[in-house]
Image (cartoon, rainbow, N blue to C red; front, top):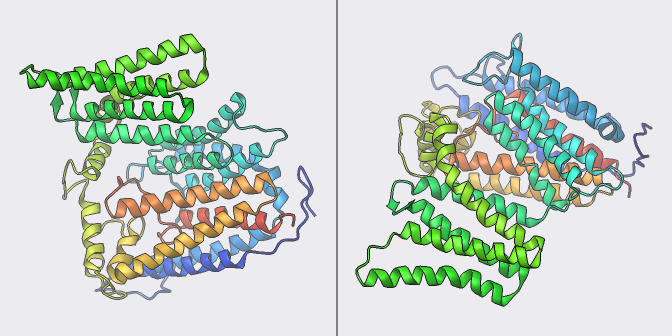
Length: 484
């Protein structure tokens, strides 16, 4: 038996439930690719290798061979060589930046004769393995500064390289691995800060056209939210009623004063009023920091000040950092622009296709929107609209429920691992699958920007299917080798 850093006693069995779900997904995906690429005037067989479905069948066959090979490799191999995989993956990303041709505005594909491979897809399992290897180090504690920096660096380095390839969507997939850190001890406050930043960004952009004195309406609403969030953190972390009363009461008095002044005919600058309220909260928190020398007060003060600084940077990032097409996608998602002939065309046609399916759908191969090719990328990133049109609400819901059962099963497997390496890798797998599902379905139905995220096992493409297969079956091999 292969031996890595420790001996692994193989007593587990292959989780055939997960394997069965994988096989079901790839078959349903194959049929969906055929439906999405079906040509009414020149119909091809499911097995015709000149068509999309035929090529997807080839990718499925090679994926099954790959899955079988992965299950035959000793589980200790993945842990022992995790860092080697990571360095090789980084080198491959650098090579891709240097030699990859420009395809649809992205330099992320290596062209090898008739075959195109996207190395960024394979970095998903590589990063997850590297993180699992780090967490399994002797005496590792995530919240130690050097360890936290190491973990974040392992994630952010490939993120930066993939962004240089103009593959923003894949870079965001890597960031989804941060979700795994919460299972391993990262404080929930970090997640709250991330969610708050998203809310600030959306509000700052969505309501940027209406002025309220010194602030826009979006900035005004966000400043009020910052004050509310700050008071909530005092209530949750400090638990001192008098402190909470002042943090909540000072802004309330300022706004009450502005309201009363308005009743007497004074032209109130509500933007300035909000800034004064937030400034009083910040000054009071600074006083608490200087008096009590507690990190909790310092953290809350940093949150309040940092939130405002982030808010003020939103317009700069949106207008000067993001590309025009990215700006338009965000505006379309937020309902600020229609642009049905431009950035909103994909989503508009996708929603029409899904909506036309009704309750039970039009029937397999009977979808008019998809058969007449109104929906771009309908066999790759937008393949779910084919499912929605032909299978309807009930069929789409059934697919989503299957994915839900799949995710729950993976969580069960991750929790039963007897090693930190297995558990961390398992939750890395879960994070990646969950992100793909939420973002892909979200962008197809128009509640998230279009960023080019495939639907696992359904979207056409060899790199995608291979990447998901490797990601999953390495985990199943580790699970099979667990000590029981």
